[in-house]
Length: 200
Image (tube, rainbow, N blue to C red; front, side, top):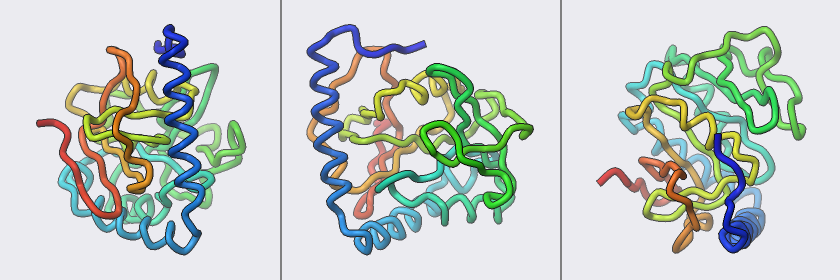
């Protein structure tokens, strides 16, 4: 399990990067976010890593995040097995299968829509692709999350060949995200203007 950075200086730098990126994202007008989200979705649905995956884990957007809902509906319509995160304990999250967004989501931890109780929980090694949220990303694949460590812990349990894809607005791409050796980078970064393959 990962924990908060042991180096207080690293924690401070991460917090600063997170705050700047979130402020830039929040400053985007709603109409601009919607237009940029549509461009990101259009790019994601052309990615082989997404369209050829049998089982995808994604997330429901909160606050000013990229709007994943059109992508989620496309995946479900295509017959993809879709999992969304459900928090079950401190820094512990599971991948719960959903088949209908309206029926299967209820208010969860922190008020974030989450899969209701009773849905199938998928093993992390069943996932072929995971859409990883974050506050900031850099062009080395490093990710700054929201400080809870939930995704770090779950992603560490996934197969090495599970594609880790980040979708974010250009304003969230920074020069460098402070990271520790155990932090797992994303493989692909998708923004409204580019798709960056970070595996090379």
